[in-house]
Image (tube, rainbow, N blue to C red; front, side, top):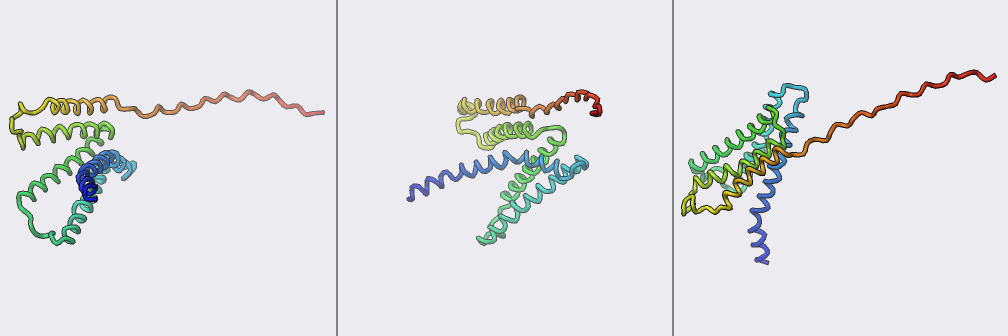
Length: 192
């Protein structure tokens, strides 16, 4: 029984990763739908700001109130914070919020969710990989990095490009049915 429990806990990271993949995968579509639906017919720029306001409210509920409640329940809400950890966490939150706003701005300037999110989700892992290596260089230097890593970077960029340029288009609009004009009716004559 302990083996099964440790096996499932060793896979927990994968389940949480897949949860994030799903949530971030629908993020752009949901955000675009919210932006278009928040005030139909209203000013598009104001609608972007209104949608972003509700993104902020959601972040407040999920990323402020929920962890605060959990920390308070465990007695660690107001102690044990380092200034370095707080600053880096704050910077991470700002980067996430600016990124979310960038998504809205991309939509507002003509980007479609399928294209915008494909570029973001293909580009973000590349940026992450490069910055992670710069932050924590490999022991053997850049030359010790396996060729498969570089191939993965190229494939990620290529995948984002292919999805962007060759995404399926919307269905063609239905052609209106052509109706035949009614044949003229024969004049009616009274029966004698």
